[in-house]
Image (cartoon, rainbow, N blue to C red; front, side):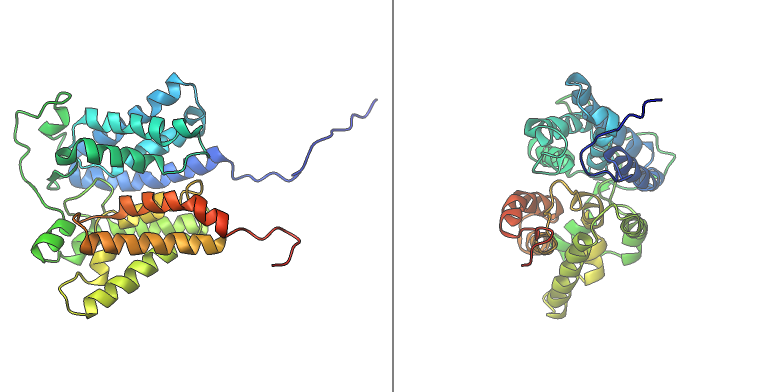
Length: 326
């Protein structure tokens, strides 16, 4: 027998944490968040998320990109859907998913080359194009609710039926009326808000699981949450009418954005020092927008702005080359 010598370039040890495996893990961890959202908002939350997922899958199918195989398109659609109100029109959610992939990923060259988090790009587009629809919040109606009439609105048309009770989110009430909400409602998720702004305790547990599996860099959530905690505590203790630190941490999309969007390895810095700068920057921007800006929420813009700074951070804060001293 002739022995064949197999020649291959390094590395010869392969990491089992391939892209598709990581995407599947993240998708699985988002399913409990979606299930709790369905419990509070009914099946309308499911239809909205499914619409955004289908919108994200369509361009991947048209251009035959890798997102269909590795699950990144499904993950992007899921994340976008969880940032939307449960009563938003399904066609708007579908359009948002489409824009997330095309503008947020494909125009940059595909997975791994995008500068901004694709799901947040789609959310920012919908925020600009449909500001009323994206800020109309429905009261939790229970899991038996099949849909909101506004879900079935025709493209560029408003629903002819009233959607029952709508109102402001806890962040809006705090910013414009100076009234804080019950912290327990924020822990459990029984408040108005986006589909993914649900059950802060579950999001914390999911974040701990992802850290345990080493699927996200621990420096990012720690730097963001620690910055927000310290900053909000200082403002609260000053007695100027600002919200207490627990309210600031668990209200809005801070937990969802910290665990799943800010930790995107493609759009975050590489070096540990750069990651600390990135996370602290997000936390500071969240506080500035929430406390002094015109919007009650600032997580989306904070992450996108620091995504834009990531190339510059990588340029000036470099990883030490292996084998060389500082």
